[in-house]
Length: 358
Image (cartoon, rainbow, N blue to C red):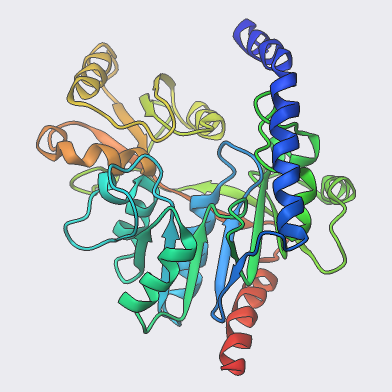
């Protein structure tokens, strides 16, 4: 652990009084919802919520995409996100002219990769869901992205994600830790997924984590890893594979770049990196800085690498990017212990049960 990491951790411990106050407020809020003093709205319609109870990257976007790949050819599927860092407010339905500034980077990513899916953004889900169903009455299922802690809407199926490297069971409230909701909120989930497990994650570790989380009898626990695909050019979509001869400049604005850094380190000759805040909105000056840093790399085999989330915020500079070797690193979720079929069955059963009722 480097000095800056130690300093940051020590500083966050000093903020414990604020964490206590924040945690108290969260617990009071949950008490009001749990005892129906504040009412949640429940729709007689299949709504799947994907979320976490901590800040930072737990792999929500890859999980949403996993569900979209699973459902899109059988059901009219929609996603609804808050649209973090967008320049608009209220309910927005994506169309051919939509940009990341209109709906946010993650919804824009879904819109680009899954054009047949209805993609919308709206801070107030209780208002946005009826609007979405009015605009797209043929919709069969709605996936709520990052909505577990927003209790105004009670989803029919809640999926909780927790990063294996930062399990919610070991965490503390903000700002001392990363929890934005109570640990006990895991009980609201129907499915718990431990994400970002390594390839050598075995049965012994599975049992250890299961014992630590202690899922309820009605809950289903899964373990997933992340898999990286071949990078493709941000404009032309041409594929370029990394090798041990490749030097990489990573330009990255995501919450948790750790797994990606490790992957690049293993697959390339070496890498340099420019880090930005999560959901960072790039400027033309940022693009110039990226170009200048890249030109300092002397290797013949070199590339600029960005995440898919970063790409949707960079593509507005299409004219400048056309001749730059900027490649996008795709990522996807996969289930460990051959349990994808069991997960898929639970999702489809949830939707089918609603169809039987109606």
